[in-house]
Length: 345
Image (cartoon, rainbow, N blue to C red; front, side):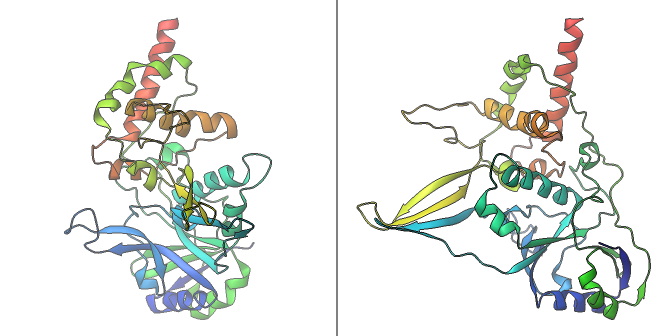
């Protein structure tokens, strides 16, 4: 892929989006006025768009893009007593606008679903094959973001078609996909070098632990979250790297021989996630669940794949109704680790 830069007036970039819309379904963060948690608050979430003006480029999205790739409820196949039929798939090609942290989160999703064992996840792969990405530049850090310390503030080496930055009512795009050059060149006011903007520092900082001793899994620090956490699971559902799901069989007949199997998003923080046959349940306390989630984000995943699962987008901090800060948890873990090391000397 080559790299060319183009500058657009709003009308020109809108024409680019309209032209791309003839081939692709385009999803981007969209401002939903009055649709937040309260009637007088707004929310930014991903939705299908047709015009450039619909794309929210200034505010950070409250929800991640992942439901485009991993729907909250996805029918995998239908079954009768004698046969199974795979559910039809929407074969439309898709473009999704992402910030650097979310493009790094995509790398984590691909790791789990495509490179986490002998075979790819078939149902994820068939959606993923039709999805491409555009990078939204970040002019500044947002509240609760800690992407710099997580190393996810840049996406230079990741795969995207083009980038877009809105500066003084002009759109600056770096084009990497040569097949789109004609559309971009025909609508730009000029061609010049463009480098996507990225965050260089965050107000929120985290100190990541180099390693975690097993004793920390039994630390009293987790008791705080047994009291504070209400187990709503919001942190998991807005997280761009959480991948847990459960299976549900929906029966159309009383005899249980006709129906469909669905893959449904699940949360390790919600009661019932660890239920097993015979009435057993692992991690009954919310503190134990918080420990499991935290260690997976900053320890277990890295131990296996070489990089942290958390991308520092800060959405979990923003959405938590109990004001539990994940960045604070990371710093508390590191402080406990340092205390353990000091005591051993």
